[in-house]
Amino acid sequence: MLLTHASYEAFLAVARTGSFTSAARSLGYTQSAVSRQVRSLEEEWGAELFERLPRGVRLTEAGRVLLPHAEAVRDRLAAARAELAALRTLNGGLLRLGAFSSASAALVPRAQAAFRKRHPGVVVTRVEGPSVKHLGLVAAGEEDLAVVTPAQGTPPPPGVTLHHLLEEPVLVALEHRHPYAGRRDVRLAELADEEWIVGDERLEDTLFRPALEAGLRPRTGLLAQDWIAKLGAVAAGLGVTLVPALAAASVRPDVTLVTIHPEDVPYRRICAAAPSTPTAAAKAFLTLLRETAEELSKELP
Image (cartoon, rainbow, N blue to C red; front, side, top):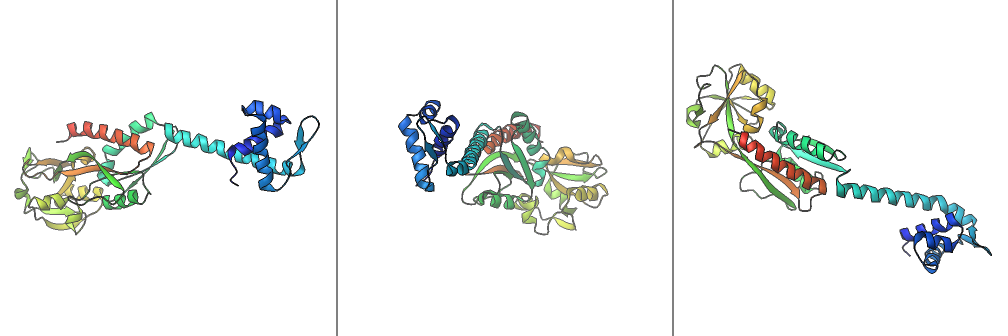
């Protein structure tokens, strides 16, 4: 027999009031309903839980043994109801968020700040990493939401839905005394002889992927995965590098950013990756990501 919460509720009410009639009145049940619930417990545990007296009832030894366990069941179920209600109302819970590195420069922090203000009871954990990693984590149910740059023409993993946020231009970072530093924009062809600082030998896996598609074949001489190292090398005049527009505000002052000519700009598609059935917190955060992306789109070059 499957014991229900109502069975324990009836047992506790009878134990508290010392009467089936009083317990039924306090619960809003009929006396026969309370009796059936208590009887189901007695059948399940194979013991009489109450001693029937001329006036009322009292716990048997078996009833006294069961009492603290029944109270624990009641308390755990009450806690579960409260936690589930908090998830629905965003008064509690956890949001596991992933993002690629430059999204954490402006897009994600702004959205997260707004989310914290609206839903302070929800704990947000955030992990940075490549987009392909986050797509896999969302598909595996290990992240609730992720900001990614999906590969062009490659569908997301099964069970993952992509929500478009914005198209991001990529800028070129130059040493502030570079001949092109004062230009409004620059053509990719003009940068063909530059020494490029890249984050990976496989340029298809870096910011250079859309630039390669636009025809740029960079001469790479320095490999630096960290943004601080890349921009430090640019400031020292060791080469140039590409910088996503979302990270432009965090670039050091001795480095100049120049817009790539509109005909050559390799835009990146930025999306939010979510499971097919996102949590309430993920839905709320996605709304704020869209609002933040719309604001940022007006600020980008």
